[in-house]
Image (cartoon, rainbow, N blue to C red; front, side, top):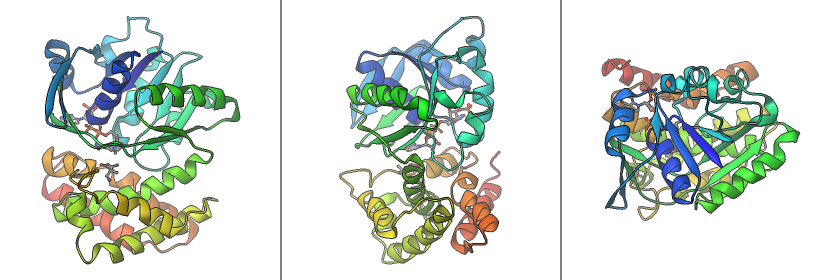
Length: 313
Ligand SMILES: NC(=O)C1=CN([C@@H]2O[C@H](COP(=O)(O)OP(=O)(O)OC[C@H]3O[C@@H](n4cnc5c(N)ncnc54)[C@H](OP(=O)(O)O)[C@@H]3O)[C@@H](O)[C@H]2O)C=CC1
Ligand SMILES: CC(C)(CO)C(=O)C(=O)O
């Protein structure tokens, strides 16, 4: 399968690497010039559980694709939420009538953006528990295991979605066809809504926060805000199920030593965060449905304060 990864930072590069190792024909696309140049000139440097390796993968800026007349079977979107619209606009030349587009970003509501550029029949929505980090342009750090949940958003897309699940599984990405992707998205959003902002503000990794005596109370309160909003959208998510998935991330042998992507954005790279698409999205929906979401609102405000203090753009 010809696969383009659009947004090939940490996660996109991980998926691109694993898919190419399984024999798929992969290209990486990103708008970060230094990163693209580094991969074009020196290959993608991978630190996999401490073992270093370098792989050659074709990588392009979107502007370099325009006259290439490239057709791909699948595009996997892995930008940050703030860059999704501009990336989709920039890769129009690669999106054809039969191109499937799988969106795996963290957060809620990305389908509204993808639908502006892609026919509903070709849109697959999902999320992932894999992790990754950048050590610099052209260099990624990988450890731990993960999984992917995905589903077509239009009934005609099911066969295509099942094919994509099979391709991801051949690459060892542990993909599952979800019967209710909105459920999967809200369940994963509970993980991000409790860990990303708090690990960032408290300056700890997942295990560090999870091991505090207050973590459980805070997590339960935030999860309750998420599930009250989800219920208004027809998603019946049990608090204990969401909490169990969050607690499972604390294990240092799993992803407990990971600093969430928001920490990497704000504290390491001094970049804007996705808070408005996670806790901020719950606040907005809460206002619409008349549900109080004070913890999500406070967390969103604190992260925005930190963005201002660090003067990030
Ligand atoms: N990292 C993780 O462990 C996980 C992340 N996710 C989600 O996956 C999606 C992609 O995340 P992730 O791979 O972490 O994103 P990255 O920050 O690694 O890369 C995303 C984009 O950000 C820009 N960028 C990143 N770092 C720099 C930098 N130092 N300087 C300039 N530009 C930079 C690049 O695009 P550009 O130049 O266009 O700005 C890049 O394509 C997000 O929605 C995230 O929440 C989901 C699960 C786990
Ligand atoms: C790994 C995990 C689940 C941590 O919250 C994540 O999605 C992220 O880092 O953004």
